[in-house]
Amino acid sequence: MKRTTKSVLVTLTSLAVASTALATMDIHKEYKVKHPDAKCDTCHMMKVPKKGAGERNDFGKKVEAAKGKDGKINWSKVPAAK
Image (spheres, rainbow, N blue to C red):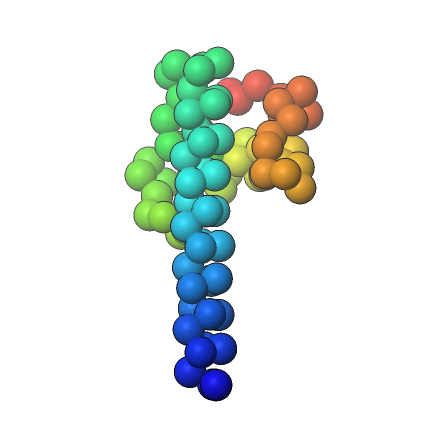
């Protein structure tokens, strides 16, 4: 019984982490349509952050704050990047 519970928890955690990474790429692609010159460092401190380890700059924090419960960004709440 304990082994089954542990397996279920590991599976659910894996799905949650994977969906977070996919949402990040979706957000990047959505922003890149509006601003083709956007790169990873538009929102992150590093030029090429590792998955889940990228510290966000001020613009990235504003994008994160504009994220709704459905995972979509309300771009009207995000000022233009500098």
